[in-house]
Length: 105
Length: 313
Image (cartoon, rainbow over all chains, first blue to last red):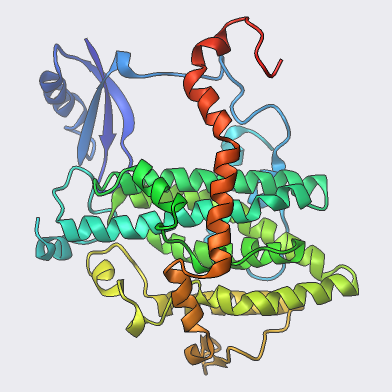
């Protein structure tokens, strides 16, 4: 049985997928995960999830974000006057990064 | 863990559903996040009619995307609140529908026309974003994670809101005048977004001591004024004489709290304010009107896949 492993580096962080282990049950899966994925990289917590419990939808199935022009949804589409609040600037930067990663521009 | 242990450990994103937390913490966090979630939903319902009334197709697209985002924020926050184990999502939504759920003062007032829209989607959203940015460091990890996504999206809302304001304030004389009047009506409510002063705040001390809240009402309000008074002026809005606003020697601003209507604020806080009841009932009406959609999704999963003609065909 295959268990997907998600690692959280430190308290408060996100559990991100980092690999999988073979194990007959949840207890063994946790132990294998601790050994295989929690030894070298910084680890605060691990989740193990049976692979067959995971549902997947990918870009073969669906056009994520839709096929139409949605530039109006991005902070970068609007020019404002004067200095923006720092949290607005931060949000816009995060959006600009996401746009680049999506290859929209 | 008891309250002392929680206070000692309290820090950004410190506690997760895996921790054994005292009732006091769970209840305080539930109250705070449920209020936040309810406000997202009630804000979306307040703005919803203006998707239809938007003056151009661009505005309509952007505004409907924004309202959709806000409903999504509500959903994220109900999950973060539910994970505290005090109330279920169902209970929170029921309380909101029957008038027991509390939400932001600004969303108890009706939005009357398009010139009111930037008062919410620029100023109130700007105020909300200031507060939400600090909540990325709250001690309840699911709340902090919800804030990551909310803040990511909210920059678009605030900038689009400012774009609407700019368009109105560079429009006709009549538009500028109407926008100024809307600003004068909304300005005191916007300042009250941050709640009563620190010494009158009911829940601040505990929430701050266990790391749920990161900044006091006064700190947030002052930071908002420092940022948004110059913005308002830049767009040609005149700051009303009341409430009086004092400019400190270092160029920052503070408001004269006594000039604000706190009786109205606390009437609203108890859900006793008449126009606010209209908002609550309006949402209930909208919910009832689209009950058939929920019924269809829940009961019709099988027929949806079949080829038998449906009523909508």
